[in-house]
Image (cartoon, rainbow, N blue to C red; front, side):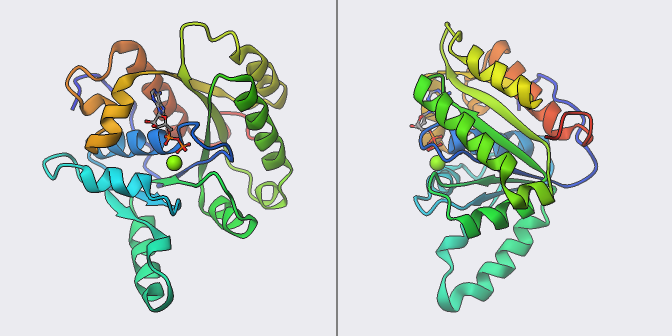
Length: 236
Ligand SMILES: Nc1ncnc2c1ncn2[C@@H]1O[C@H](COP(=O)(O)OP(=O)(O)O)[C@@H](O)[C@H]1O
Ligand SMILES: [Mg+2]
């Protein structure tokens, strides 16, 4: 793994739900990179793929055995008679020290409620387009009003994804987040390496010269936020 340092991990388990009803904003990219990072830190890591499109599962399938192992589970693969297998696999995955959960863009209310109940942290990636920012803000607004979220609020953060040099477009989103006291924890750039890493079952930092200091810092900031004690950051 990289010689760069990452924060100390909290002793408690963390289940990180990566979610946003907008497709293509980077949920799978973020999920797989987080899973690879945690696995590289030698903690038992699981990746739960709730998206029937299975992109995260395909990524894991392509992952070389020589790389730090990640336990994968795609609950939708086990239907009917296989439901016992599903609950068994889910239980195993959910016992991992770090569980990263990928979700589809189309969120059925009943599924979403269950996933919310299972999460310790929620991370929402947003792309730097006016349409994506509007959709992201609406998603966050709905989430904060969601009865199930309000019953069990967990720390929620936004990350910017595929940012280019001019990130002025995020200013509006930033103001909106500040008004809700939701942290904007990291900005990931638009890098070809993410596309390559998606194909090869790697994290960006596992590619040769895949990650530079700036991008690494963004991962550090995100991990810091995930690992922080609840209450250290605004829970809306
Ligand atoms: N930071 C990034 N830089 C370059 N390409 C990216 C980045 N994030 C995502 N992508 C690419 O954008 C597409 C959509 O990303 P993905 O993670 O699949 O989104 P989602 O899971 O939200 O639908 C994929 O082809 C992915 O490789
Ligand atoms: Mg996806």
